[in-house]
Structure formats: structure tokens, C-alpha cells
Length: 192
Image 1 (tube, rainbow, N blue to C red):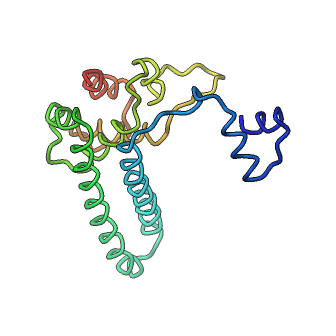
Image 2 (cartoon, helix red, strand yellow):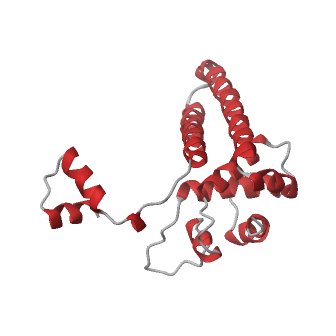
Image 3 (cartoon, one colour):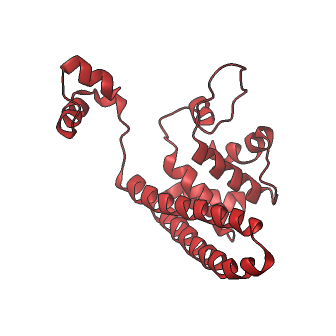
């Protein structure tokens, strides 16, 4: 879109040209954000980075020999502790900033599960209350796929929904079907 606007206004491809192009784009193309969203997004992004690093370390751990695994174990444990602390901070901040968050935590029965609370906080922060149920479910990837069409959804939010659903259903498997996700957590999110 930026390229098209630059072409229409004959602006150069530079930082200054990009700023002028962004200023000429209509307001409806931008999402209104609050301070709550910006604070939560910063914390969630840090948690996502930790999660990616943790997964990379686990993959490397599986490929190493037993002697080399012992060297990597403390690093993985340390990162897991940091992830728990960050998840607790996210859950605490969401409880302060979103009034429906605490009610949903109690309703889903995930009060003691920090990782599930973090996943719920991530979902609540990124969901737009002005959108209807259909657009929200499409954003989460809860739609019947049609062969040959692009499936556009947020992978981060889809994984957060899977983590939350696994925790709420006391299911340790992260290979959940869309039917389980629709039946479990989405009904509770409609009450917001």
C-alpha cells in the first residue's frame, strides 16, 4: 500500500517520502491503539522471543550427545525460569489493564496456571472488541479451509489460543483440532 501511495504522490523512496506517504493514507487503514495495548504488546513480544529461543535450544538439545546435553541443561532451565517470571508479569499487568481478564481467568479455571494466563492475556490484548465474532474467529484461524484459497490468520494468536485451550482442557498435547478450540475457549471469549 505504501508503494502505491508513493507512486500516486510521486514521492521518493526514502524515510522522508515514507513519512509523507503514511500521512496521506486515510485514517480507516490504521488501528487505534491504547496505552494498554502498547504496554502489553511490548511484554508479549519479549515473551515470544523467549519462547522461540527456548524452542531452538530444545531442538539443539535433542541433537546433542549425552555429555553435551549436560552443558546445555542449565541454560534451558534458566530460560524456563525467566519465561515463568515474564508470564507472571504479563498476567499481572493484564489483570490491572483489562477488567474482563480476571473474570475470564476464574471462569476458565486457570488461576494457578501462569502460562495459560499469559496466553489469555495475549489473546485479550490483540483482539479488537469492535470486530464481530466471524472476523475474530477468522483472525484466530477458526474457519473451514477452502482448497486453493489463501488462509489469512494470525499465527501468533492461533498458537496462543492453542496454549490456552490445552491448559483449560487439562490436555498436554498441543495438537488440538479446531473443533476442540471452538468448543472450549471461544464460547467464553464471546462473553467479553
